[in-house]
Image: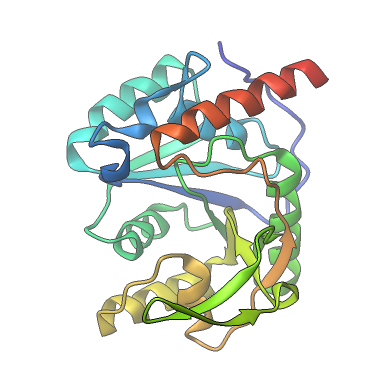
Length: 242
């Protein structure tokens, strides 16, 4: 069994469900399903789900995926003995549609919904817990990390000006919201035909504020073949620290 183990649950008053969108096409990975690729001999999706399976502030997990992946993902979840995975549902053509399908599949008692990229397998309990805690207090929270590179404004192939880094950050997942707020935001997007690259944008479109919490530079998203090598290097470094 890979890294499982029951821990005492500390959030009895605020049930939390995590929706993991896993319906992408993996185009930048050459078409191969990146979530089934292995990081140090364990599939990416398994590592992602395991992070939430082991975290005691998460009550249940919902996966959204392409129809052809429902049965393979179900077999994978059973093979690793994941107990919190309650539903695997068909996603939509866009991220917004896929997340909405996942939110609708969450148990009614879930007061908070976290949304986490299936391709972010290295998220830590600390990042998850801080975002959940902040969302329980404010209604919406997402982890961010400061940008390391200098940022420029570019138009028509020319660099025009600096963009101060102090006001810019890279947003990560899990992004955590009061369920009613997220559902309202996604249903509004569906009705208007809008699509968003992340769920903070959908909530912000309603005029709601999102609290910024502490992310991690190790919480990378597996997108290209080079990211597999980076992810394995992070895992090896973690093993050395333990």
